[in-house]
Image (cartoon, rainbow, N blue to C red; front, top):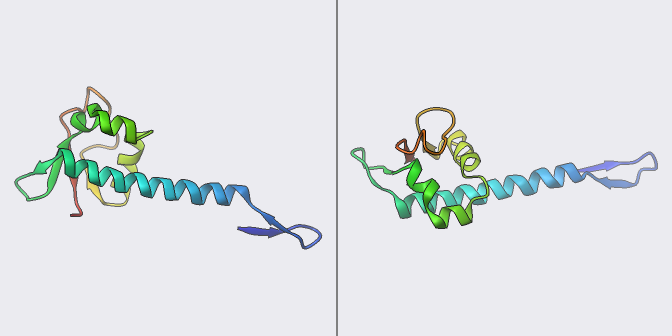
Amino acid sequence: MVVLSHFNQPIVCRAANHHRAAKMNVEHEVTLLIEEIRRLGSKNADGKISVKFGVLFNDDQCANLFEALVGTLKAAKRKKIIAFEGELLLQGVHDNVDVILLQD
């Protein structure tokens, strides 16, 4: 985003650039999440790939890939890429909750 100063000189809005970079990072992490669900999951009765949250959370590769797995899951759910029961998944409490990949 470019804003003009009082002297009609362009000023680059750092917040807009940061927002754009963060959005690209979230999209990248969602793509990685899809790959990890495919790697760790299996087909459920509906033919969709599903994995338990605890399996994702405790996997070493996922731990190294995702800075904030729960945030990435929420972003993917908001985009209707995955589904899971509830609003938020917490380690231990929700280890047996299925994370279902809606897009294949």
